[in-house]
Length: 492
Image (cartoon, rainbow, N blue to C red; front, side, top):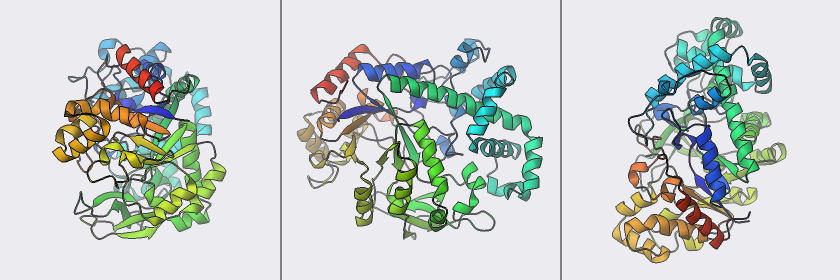
């Protein structure tokens, strides 16, 4: 069955308060998808953002980002009182000002906690029981705040750093109110998320999530489960993740995430991974596993190395992990992000799992027709994109492309000018044989490189783009609907 969808993070919605939320604008976006014949909504990781506001460096693999909670929804439910003018008014409607958004939203969420925390206690007690991760996450977040957001490996009290029982009990009592607040926020996030998911599913829309293979060093996950990571006796990573030097980077990429102790995890029946994937299956209908390559073989770099030049490849868990996951978590569709160093071991694992890989249309024109991303080489069991959150927009790419590359793309996709590229590339993508075609919202709107979501390797200026209010027009919806019909991607 051929389907299509849009890549659009929640934070990019034009919600009031300076950042996209799980409020009315999210439901309106689902309506736009349905009216356009689209059946997939892909989002970026929805956890609390980490360094540089990256959703790929979250403080928890289970928690939701409180900044995505809709305050107007809370007011509609009688849980929070506020005036419209109390919501942050951003100077630029197409950019997220995280510092001011966080300050404003935290203040109003604390007011909500004061007004409704006690009223919701029965529901929150039930939520805590059903989500055992949330108490450790809330304690972690509260202790970090107490220590001025210091990374947990540098907390001045070694007893809580090493999770000694008496310290855990002491801080849980001392920070009881703060812990309750963070649990309260997670309850609100989940309530709103599952309301949106139910609406999407009821209207034929699948929610497509994104799961980083690695976790952040400064996370509740590494603090709570240090035994499953390659850490030394002081909880400092021994080896960290990255990718080796290539055509684009002579130093490689040093991500810095702690690596897993795969042999130990296998001995435990991959229990932590089973729990993680069960969590993903609850949140999403399908999920992209970022850097799937790392399950076949992963690049290991010594902690403290200045770059990724001198790392080494190590064999990953391979089939053993996915045999366990397929048995324990059968109710989720997995997409493998297989971009990068794809060797025979990676291909064999992908073939065995049967998961669709990814094809990026704008990657396919910088050589010749032997390029694996050239559209003539696409196969059904793939998810095809014009680009991802890590790439320039289609228009930005076209405006910066080498003239020979652009001419080749124009010959294949049927355009002559850079400004014609977005529409032509989207049409070509929908017509390709891949079962799933996904377009970043920026490309559907024909936006230039100023709307790019992320610049890999750049520490700032990322994850900021927001769609302007009024961008979802009836004309745009009709054009996409006709394209879906023409390419047989609308199955309703």
